[in-house]
Amino acid sequence: MKKILLTFLLLSTVLFAEVKNEYLSQTLIDSKIPIVDIRTPAEWRETGIVKNSIPIMFFNERGGYNIDLFLTQLNEKVDTKKSFALICHTGSRTRTLSAFLSKELGYDVVNIKGGIVLAKSKNIKLVPSKQ
Image (cartoon, rainbow, N blue to C red; front, side):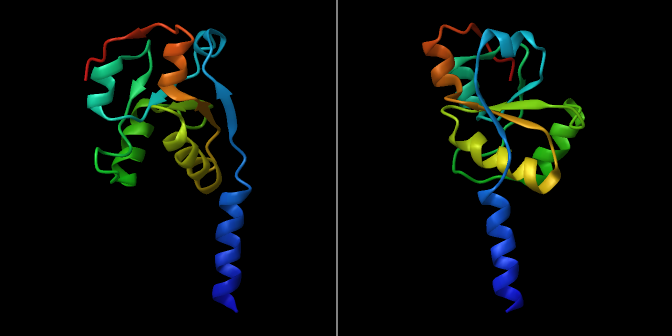
């Protein structure tokens, strides 16, 4: 019975995660909220990144990840006591990571829906990555 209750609690945490979901806009960029780009270095080189965004890879090319390394880099580069945004290619990776960071760690996270693909279609200026 305890395992069933624990499983239910874990599932409900994921199902009811409260994450702000927004499309990337110039208004969001101008707000100076830190934008963390969780794509891979190859993706950053291919498309560029949103100006002033912070590239910190989460999922590698094979879909693997190192949560401890990511959190260390995130906390070095972003004040996680304040709101920050996550962006990836289309928004699916950030949707998963945002829910985890929000519910499990209590971070105030904005998931950028549509990712870089939508940003490019909206003619949001991207700059070359220095990574």
